[in-house]
Image (tube, rainbow, N blue to C red):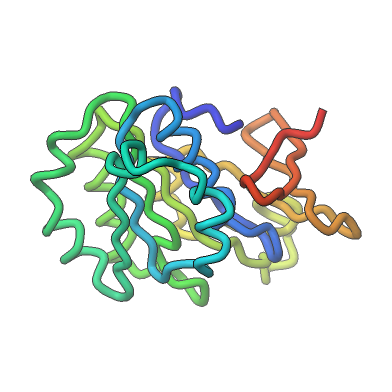
Length: 195
């Protein structure tokens, strides 16, 4: 669904596009390929959503996943799992959901932490997510007038993939990755590609 072979990814999600379902879908696909996942999230999503998407997996698969709710302590939680991160292999995944607050500018400390993360763990797959925001300049920058968080530091370290809710289409989201666009639909098993 999202090509993870081209380096670190920043998923910038627009209003109503449900990045937590996308994160869980990516976690599911990674686990199904017999890889390990460390899923860090500022706040855990609704348990029903987690059960819908991951609930059918048996314990032997779920044993390859670590879930960490970090709240406002991302740096200390990352420091605490440094030993685990060094043991991850090429196709294993670190996903950090809502790496920065969804209001105002991303803090310099947060952006530099994400840059250092990419530099220190370039051999593993890294995805971070955040909510996009409307461009107040009136210049219609970013994607359809929405901007991704983190500015140039994040843009230089991560490839930005956009999630955009399709107006008047309850469960449909457009994934924009450079010039490529893909329409997906939210289901109880996560996002599915629409043919």
